[in-house]
View 1 (cartoon, rainbow, N blue to C red):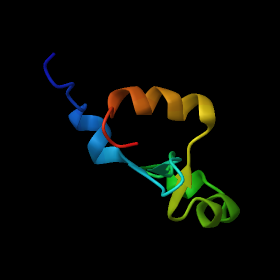
View 2: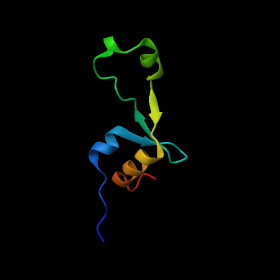
View 3: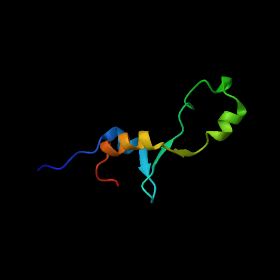
View 4: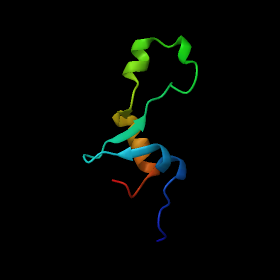
Length: 66
C-alpha cells in the first residue's frame, strides 16, 4: 500500500497537543475588529482547542500526527 498523504492546508493550520487534542488559531479575527467587543478580542487571543467533532475531521486529514 502507498503512504497516505497529509493535507497541506491542514498541516499549516493545526497542531496537536501531547494528549492528542487539536490546537488551532482563533477564528473571527482577520478583519472587522472595530465592531468586535473588547471582551471578544481579549478572549480570542492565542490558540484554542477544537471540539471533539471538529478534531475528528482534522485527524482524518493528518493521518501520521497522532
